[in-house]
Amino acid sequence: MMTDLRFDDSPVRPARKRSFLRRDRQNGKIFGVCAGMAETLDVDVTWVRIAWVAGTLLGFGSLLLIYLAIALIAD
Image (tube, rainbow, N blue to C red):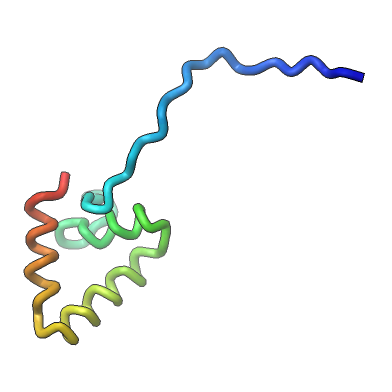
């Protein structure tokens, strides 16, 4: 027995390519860099913030400069 499959005639939008360097201003605390990364990686923003602070402390502040650079060049 064959069934009749009918598809919706709504226009198909191409999948939006999500860049890793993006900012989420609505969910962000300072510039939204960690919130943008968390959305891209599909993880909780708290884990990204903890990892960023730990990396900044262990890297003697080098990630702070990277954070500022991302905040300036991200969309």
